[in-house]
Image (cartoon, rainbow, N blue to C red):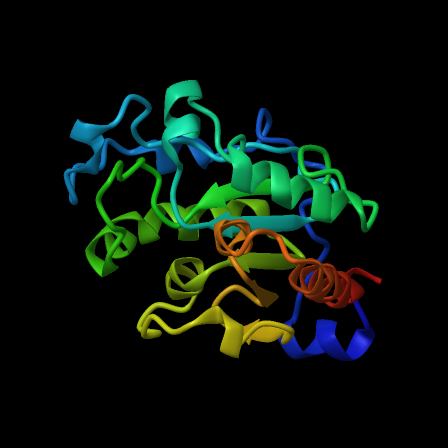
Length: 208
């Protein structure tokens, strides 16, 4: 990150060395939240983030899918595999270099994630970001952006992608990315994958 960007946000050293196994205070984010009711409908309620975050990259998606719910681990379904490949193409290890989290911590099943679910989980997301102190946030999809920027109306990320947006609340740059599930639904066209790779490469420039 350049001196100018660091000055803008008054960012100190990022918490790259802290792994999920050693951070103090994270346990308080595991509160028995029952605000939205999704915890009663899934196998792995209140799923915690994972990853070692060696490069200070915090990735936030929408919610755990059915595969993640079955295994109790986030980003292991088709969307996670797609993202892992895209990051690897830029020399980034999804497990070693990143922290993986979701705007909603319980699998919604066939229900659509809405603003109520995002609001209920927001304190947990805030706690994670404050604990991890990331140097970059990759927000996958509209729900992830709404979680980071509370009050932001749901809007297509296609209109925001390719940009770096400052979060003054957390003192970090946020890069909106298309949710991997969107790219998968389109059949993974080469032009969209090329666009995705370019957006990730642009976002990673803040780490230089």
